[in-house]
Length: 141
Image 1 (cartoon, one colour):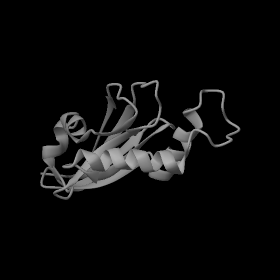
Image 2 (cartoon, rainbow, N blue to C red):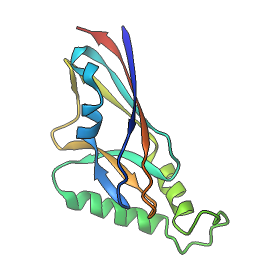
Image 3 (cartoon, rainbow, N blue to C red):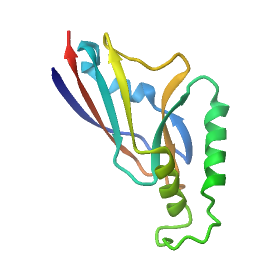
Image 4 (cartoon, rainbow, N blue to C red):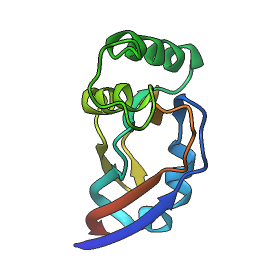
């Protein structure tokens, strides 16, 4: 069994949901060595989130963002308002979607479904760069 770990600094993304599968794969040169294992992706932030979702129709990610805005609107009477009107809604959205993913690996490939992709949901307007910790644990070839 082997462990591999990388930090990945993502470029700043505008508010919304964005496919990041290719960026994650590019940061994992050891992936092709793994016969069977798991990839754990952890986002080191509290106002952005990760999800696995549709990777073909961009309207899916736009609709997901719109639904999240309805579930956690800026107009709600939040108590935590020190960091701007989109901060607390971002925390709520992160709690709903989550900050980590676990994806199985087989024969050097992530076992995502045909229509699945790894997505970052940026919940803030200020567009900070986000950091991921990518950890592979598995049996190498």
